Image (cartoon, rainbow, N blue to C red; front, side, top):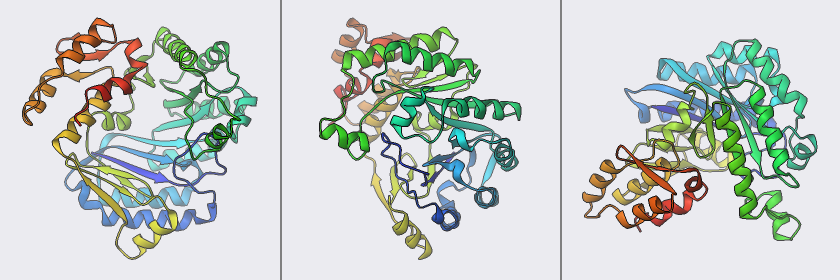
Length: 374
């Protein structure tokens, strides 16, 4: 079982991000107290189940003070059973990872950091409206390693404005040189509600053409795999099998509870999500009645989710399991599409599993939608 805590605060809005957050940092204490209350209210969601991962995401969880982190973990330890080797991750911005703050995190049991570096190009960092520079990125990772946190992931975004393949190669090689065991490499995606999205509407921002973005994708995969990283998901790479246990739970349809505004929960049969508004969230919690919506998942929904998530991973689709699931609702395996994928070298079948090739990963979302149940 897995626990996610959404910390909805940032110092400033990154120009590409459409996650739920607020820059009103004075609300942090009240928000953490509300989340502590929600943990109590929702504890039955995880009844009799041991936590194997805890993930503090955001937003910027590294904006929490020592007191606020302790409030959350004191309640988690009181309410839930935590596996002795649980993966406990905190997302952090480089500028927050001072030696003193890392020591604070270690005391709570946090044993993994996910650091939002994005790029080592200072001009591009300013364009993204990030609050750190490349020197702080390197120092943050070294601080954590020196203090004994070995399980570190860094985020890199490729396809940035004016970036060439040489720029992408530099960013990936710099990330590799940090000697971390997990790297997430994402293409820049322009979302409508973001600053970049609004600039795009006005014709002031242009995304890279698909063929150029594909070249950045292929280069990042090539460089990372040559350096010994396993591409275990379309955008995620790990050395020494240091896969993100928490994120893998999403791709493997495992149960998880989400706490905080906009957080999602999943128990196989249904999905629920909290209101994406800090004020409404805290008011509802204060009244003892969390504000969330629930979607009961039909067998078709569950099969579609299995296809969408597993096809993005190196483990691929278990064709026997998929066939059995489809037969239960009088559907058959999409053999025509599967054979086409293999013929066009978008996928290969290994020991009964359908696994995307590098060229297939480029169009993973399209391939998934081609065999969705409508």
